[in-house]
Length: 178
Image (cartoon, rainbow, N blue to C red):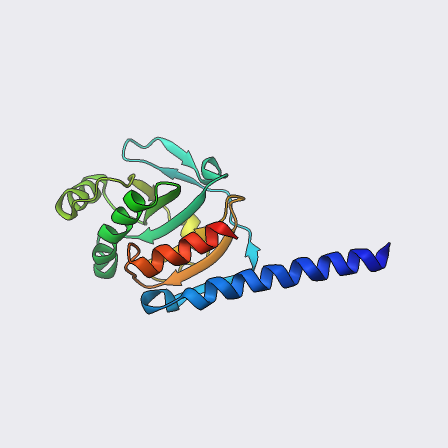
Protein backbone atom coordinates (compact mmCIF):
# COMPACT_ATOMS: atom_id res chain seq x y z
CA UNK A 1 0.00 0.00 0.00
CA UNK A 2 2.79 2.41 0.92
CA UNK A 3 4.41 1.79 -2.47
CA UNK A 4 1.18 2.84 -4.22
CA UNK A 5 0.92 6.01 -2.18
CA UNK A 6 4.50 6.92 -3.07
CA UNK A 7 3.69 6.34 -6.75
CA UNK A 8 0.51 8.40 -6.51
CA UNK A 9 2.23 11.35 -4.84
CA UNK A 10 5.10 11.17 -7.32
CA UNK A 11 2.67 11.20 -10.25
CA UNK A 12 0.79 14.16 -8.76
CA UNK A 13 4.03 16.09 -8.22
CA UNK A 14 5.21 15.40 -11.76
CA UNK A 15 1.84 16.49 -13.14
CA UNK A 16 1.85 19.68 -11.07
CA UNK A 17 5.41 20.52 -12.14
CA UNK A 18 4.55 19.84 -15.79
CA UNK A 19 1.53 22.15 -15.56
CA UNK A 20 3.69 24.82 -13.93
CA UNK A 21 6.27 24.41 -16.70
CA UNK A 22 3.53 24.84 -19.31
CA UNK A 23 2.44 28.13 -17.72
CA UNK A 24 6.06 29.27 -17.32
CA UNK A 25 6.73 28.64 -21.00
CA UNK A 26 3.99 31.14 -21.95
CA UNK A 27 5.60 34.06 -20.11
CA UNK A 28 6.80 36.79 -22.45
CA UNK A 29 7.14 40.55 -22.15
CA UNK A 30 5.91 41.85 -18.79
CA UNK A 31 4.89 38.35 -17.77
CA UNK A 32 8.57 37.33 -17.54
CA UNK A 33 8.45 39.14 -14.17
CA UNK A 34 5.68 36.80 -12.95
CA UNK A 35 7.14 34.44 -10.32
CA UNK A 36 5.21 31.16 -10.24
CA UNK A 37 5.18 29.27 -6.93
CA UNK A 38 5.75 25.51 -7.01
CA UNK A 39 3.54 25.19 -3.94
CA UNK A 40 0.63 27.56 -3.20
CA UNK A 41 1.29 29.98 -0.33
CA UNK A 42 -1.27 30.70 2.37
CA UNK A 43 -2.68 34.22 2.40
CA UNK A 44 -3.68 35.83 5.69
CA UNK A 45 -7.31 36.59 6.38
CA UNK A 46 -7.94 40.25 5.74
CA UNK A 47 -10.75 42.74 5.72
CA UNK A 48 -10.62 45.54 3.18
CA UNK A 49 -12.78 48.67 3.21
CA UNK A 50 -14.73 49.95 0.22
CA UNK A 51 -15.47 53.60 -0.59
CA UNK A 52 -18.27 53.65 2.02
CA UNK A 53 -16.08 52.03 4.70
CA UNK A 54 -18.04 48.77 4.39
CA UNK A 55 -15.87 45.73 5.12
CA UNK A 56 -15.08 43.10 2.49
CA UNK A 57 -13.25 39.95 3.59
CA UNK A 58 -10.67 38.54 1.22
CA UNK A 59 -12.19 35.15 2.04
CA UNK A 60 -15.41 36.29 0.29
CA UNK A 61 -13.64 35.75 -3.03
CA UNK A 62 -12.78 32.10 -2.44
CA UNK A 63 -13.98 29.86 -5.23
CA UNK A 64 -12.70 32.31 -7.85
CA UNK A 65 -9.35 33.12 -9.37
CA UNK A 66 -8.26 36.55 -8.11
CA UNK A 67 -5.77 39.10 -9.42
CA UNK A 68 -4.96 41.05 -6.24
CA UNK A 69 -3.18 44.30 -7.06
CA UNK A 70 -1.55 46.46 -4.38
CA UNK A 71 -1.34 50.08 -5.48
CA UNK A 72 -1.57 53.70 -4.31
CA UNK A 73 -2.82 56.92 -5.87
CA UNK A 74 0.61 58.54 -5.50
CA UNK A 75 2.43 55.66 -7.28
CA UNK A 76 3.12 56.59 -10.93
CA UNK A 77 3.62 53.01 -12.22
CA UNK A 78 0.42 52.00 -10.40
CA UNK A 79 -1.52 54.75 -12.15
CA UNK A 80 -0.11 53.66 -15.52
CA UNK A 81 -1.03 50.02 -14.87
CA UNK A 82 -4.57 50.49 -13.51
CA UNK A 83 -6.38 50.96 -16.85
CA UNK A 84 -4.93 47.63 -18.08
CA UNK A 85 -6.30 45.92 -14.96
CA UNK A 86 -9.69 47.48 -15.69
CA UNK A 87 -9.57 46.16 -19.27
CA UNK A 88 -8.46 42.74 -17.98
CA UNK A 89 -11.55 42.56 -15.77
CA UNK A 90 -13.75 43.38 -18.78
CA UNK A 91 -11.96 40.83 -20.99
CA UNK A 92 -11.92 37.99 -18.43
CA UNK A 93 -15.12 38.20 -16.36
CA UNK A 94 -14.52 34.74 -14.79
CA UNK A 95 -11.53 36.28 -13.03
CA UNK A 96 -11.86 38.76 -10.15
CA UNK A 97 -9.54 41.77 -10.31
CA UNK A 98 -9.17 43.40 -6.89
CA UNK A 99 -7.13 46.58 -6.71
CA UNK A 100 -6.23 47.35 -3.11
CA UNK A 101 -5.20 50.93 -2.36
CA UNK A 102 -2.53 50.44 0.28
CA UNK A 103 -1.94 52.94 3.05
CA UNK A 104 -3.34 56.45 3.12
CA UNK A 105 -5.37 56.90 -0.03
CA UNK A 106 -8.36 59.22 0.28
CA UNK A 107 -11.55 57.82 -1.22
CA UNK A 108 -12.07 61.08 -3.12
CA UNK A 109 -8.59 60.75 -4.64
CA UNK A 110 -9.21 57.15 -5.69
CA UNK A 111 -12.57 58.03 -7.23
CA UNK A 112 -11.08 61.06 -9.02
CA UNK A 113 -8.26 58.89 -10.42
CA UNK A 114 -10.73 56.18 -11.55
CA UNK A 115 -12.79 58.86 -13.35
CA UNK A 116 -9.72 60.42 -15.01
CA UNK A 117 -8.33 57.03 -16.07
CA UNK A 118 -11.69 55.66 -17.25
CA UNK A 119 -11.65 52.81 -14.71
CA UNK A 120 -15.23 51.48 -14.61
CA UNK A 121 -14.96 47.72 -13.95
CA UNK A 122 -13.01 47.71 -10.68
CA UNK A 123 -14.11 48.20 -7.08
CA UNK A 124 -12.62 50.70 -4.67
CA UNK A 125 -10.96 48.66 -1.93
CA UNK A 126 -8.56 49.96 0.70
CA UNK A 127 -6.01 48.46 3.06
CA UNK A 128 -5.97 51.61 5.18
CA UNK A 129 -3.39 50.49 7.75
CA UNK A 130 -1.40 48.42 5.23
CA UNK A 131 -2.03 45.33 7.34
CA UNK A 132 -2.61 42.97 4.43
CA UNK A 133 0.25 44.36 2.36
CA UNK A 134 2.67 44.04 5.29
CA UNK A 135 1.46 40.52 6.10
CA UNK A 136 2.02 39.52 2.47
CA UNK A 137 5.51 41.03 2.29
CA UNK A 138 4.64 43.84 -0.12
CA UNK A 139 7.62 46.18 0.16
CA UNK A 140 7.03 48.44 -2.84
CA UNK A 141 4.27 49.23 -5.29
CA UNK A 142 2.77 48.01 -7.49
CA UNK A 143 2.68 44.32 -6.62
CA UNK A 144 0.18 41.90 -8.13
CA UNK A 145 -0.58 38.53 -6.56
CA UNK A 146 -2.55 35.75 -8.26
CA UNK A 147 -4.78 33.77 -5.89
CA UNK A 148 -6.23 30.36 -6.72
CA UNK A 149 -9.86 29.50 -5.84
CA UNK A 150 -8.69 28.21 -2.46
CA UNK A 151 -7.43 31.72 -1.66
CA UNK A 152 -3.75 30.78 -1.87
CA UNK A 153 -1.03 32.74 -3.65
CA UNK A 154 0.22 30.91 -6.74
CA UNK A 155 2.14 33.71 -8.47
CA UNK A 156 3.47 37.22 -7.87
CA UNK A 157 4.60 40.04 -10.12
CA UNK A 158 6.58 42.94 -8.70
CA UNK A 159 6.28 46.13 -10.74
CA UNK A 160 3.78 47.20 -13.34
CA UNK A 161 2.53 45.17 -16.29
CA UNK A 162 0.10 45.35 -19.19
CA UNK A 163 -2.42 42.97 -17.65
CA UNK A 164 -4.77 43.07 -20.62
CA UNK A 165 -2.11 42.03 -23.13
CA UNK A 166 -2.69 38.83 -25.09
CA UNK A 167 0.27 37.24 -23.30
CA UNK A 168 -0.96 38.14 -19.82
CA UNK A 169 -4.41 36.78 -20.64
CA UNK A 170 -2.87 33.56 -22.01
CA UNK A 171 -0.82 33.08 -18.83
CA UNK A 172 -3.83 33.73 -16.61
CA UNK A 173 -6.03 31.39 -18.66
CA UNK A 174 -3.37 28.66 -18.41
CA UNK A 175 -3.18 29.13 -14.63
CA UNK A 176 -6.95 28.90 -14.39
CA UNK A 177 -6.93 25.67 -16.45
CA UNK A 178 -4.40 23.89 -14.17
